[in-house]
Length: 281
Image (cartoon, rainbow, N blue to C red; front, side, top):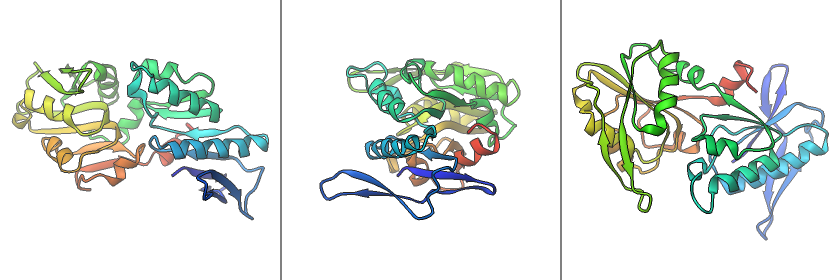
């Protein structure tokens, strides 16, 4: 659900707001006795729930009605992977988001097309290198981009960790079925400490495929960084990510804290804390 926050001299607190749903299905927002119209406030949305986006609209209308901008932390921009489809889901979601956000903070959006669709709000990216470096070890000697789409973000993370060499993998995705095949990785990993970098982990098929193609079982250790952990699939996810000793991510999506991954392998950054302590929001 959407989180509505108020800044205070001591940090932040939950705003005194209640989202209600009428029997007919309509959402409504009610202010409580402690609601301060003059307070500095922001909203946090994780994931892509349509109900959350509608709740954001109600909240934005309330905030704007008191003369303040609608500041929104939405690290995971929903449907950004649908930037080539028709209908273009990335554009549809972007239209909704931009209608309800005056200032938007996001993390590692999937593609330039999806970013371009966010016309309207003042958009600020959480720096990826800074984000990954806040939690990752410093002992890697190889970073891997599992496919072409991960190339730039893998190089960004490698630079933030100390100019680590980057190897590039390949894969083929059938546009009709979504089936993955043709994984390739030419760089040897035997005896090395390896970090695989990408933006999103859903069911983990990409990471299982590149692990098999790259013979990750010969490495000293292989870890995974994904900015957004959707982590769907239950037992299938566990099997796909079995080659990875540790998985590092953020709490940008509800799936990150609800996944079946054991806590001794999954390490998450609290993004509200991250953006506030670094002055990003």
